[in-house]
Image 1: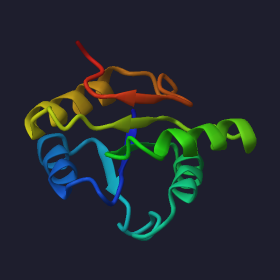
Image 2: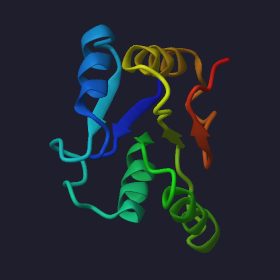
Image 3: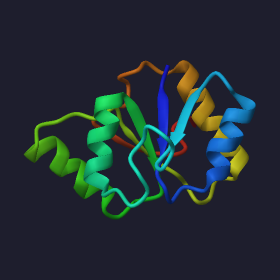
Amino acid sequence: MICYLMDENVNPIYKNQLLKDFPELTVWAVGDAGTPPKGTLDPEILVWCEANGFILVTNNRVSMPVHLNDYLMVQNQHIPGIFILNPKMSVGETIDELAIVAFVSEDDEYQDCISYLPLLR
C-alpha cells in the first residue's frame, strides 16, 4: 500500500484526518520521528522518500518540478512519486482522494512522476 510523507508546509489537518478516518494508512510528516527534520531541503527529502518508499505530498508547485528533474536526470535516482495538492479542493475532497489512491493504486504506479490532485476524475 502507498505510504505518504507530508511536506512540512502541508497543513497538519491532512495527516491527522487521514489517520483518523483511515488508521491503516501510513502517513507521516516532515519533522515526525524517523523522518527528515523540519527545514530539510527538498532534494534531501526526495532522497529520504526513495530510501523509505514514501510518496511526497506537497504544495510546492514551483521548485519541486526542478528538484525532481535534477533527481531523475542528473543524479539518476528514482522516487515513488510526488503529489501536489490542489488549493481548489476542500480538505475532505483531498482526504478522500488520497485515501482512494492509497487503497487502489499499485506501489510503483506514480514512480518518478509529479501528479496533481485530483488524480481521479
